[in-house]
Length: 80
Image 1: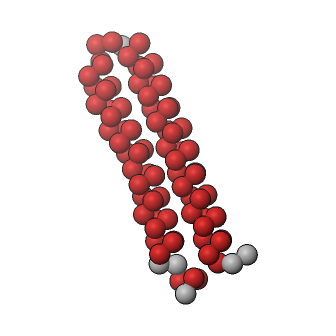
Image 2: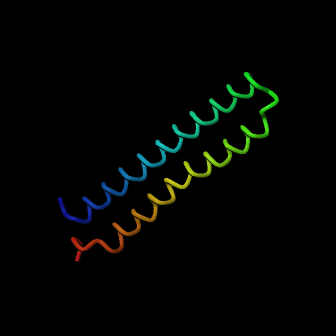
Image 3: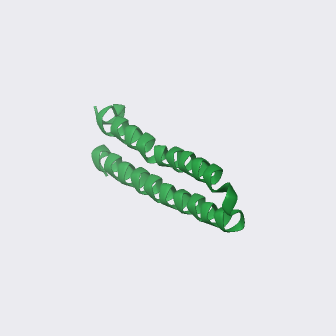
C-alpha cells in the first residue's frame, strides 16, 4: 500500500471516529439535559447554559480532528 493511500485511510478513520464520538457525546449531554429539566423544571436556565457550553466543547473535537487531518494530508513527512 502506498503512503498516499495509507494517509487517506488514516484521514477517513480519524474523521469518522471524531464525528461519531461527537454525535454520541452530544446525545448523552442533551439526554441528561432533558432528564434534568423533567426532574427540576425550575433549574432550566442553569441546565440550559451548562448544556450549551458542553455541546460547544464536544463539537470542538471534530474541528480539532479536521486540523489534524489537514496536517496529515498536507504536511506528512512520509509522503515527500
